Image (cartoon, rainbow, N blue to C red):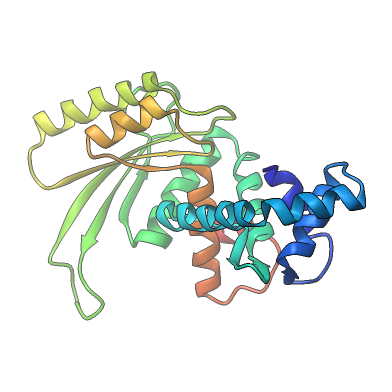
Amino acid sequence: MNLSAIIELAYSCEKAKFSTLQFLTSYYQLEGKNMFKAAELAEINIQNFIGYAQSHIALATKLNTASIFENIDSSIVSFNPDYPIIQNIYKGLHKLTWQEFEEFCGTLLKKCFNAESVNISQKSNDGGVDFSAKVPFKNMYSLSPYGYVELYGQAKKYSGNVGRVDIDKFTAFANRQKRDNQYPAQLFIFCTTSDYIQSALDEISKNNFISLNGQQIAFLVFNQMKSIDFKGDDYLSTFIQ
């Protein structure tokens, strides 16, 4: 299905919930079908639409991203009211310069993962680390950490997806780092404003790296701002401050 058309239709009015059949009929009309053909297609494809929406919700939950759908059954479809906000954050990430995105990743570590001693390299094409930090190992009752995990990361501000070459370079850095500094524990993370091609994801998984794409980062920013009960409009700029 055309997700862009679903988004356009879902947020074209103030309603949070729609009749599933009526929404699907309107969707086919938006796609250029006349009223009668749209109603026919909606009847035929309602179970497919429900399956599509449920899969979208399940995948978003698995990947720690936001789904446009909040809930759906044969009677009612409801849409996530926060989805447009999260997409605006995502678009804002792409407006950052590469230097700003590196600085942003440091802020992300501090605010969302309680990282300490965050350092930004501010070097272009270094083929190694763009930022580093210490992540404390503690629970909510600890007065002080039991220890720290050293974190090293790459930040890529891309319009296209991250490829295997970028991950291979980062893997070479990580292998040198692990060889030369066996202690303390080390963690490696790759952040991008876009996403990853499958072979890059396979290499990330093989090396036990952590990867964050633009949609995941936008969701992290939104949840962090929501946790402080932020009521404004510019989530990203306020987060960075």
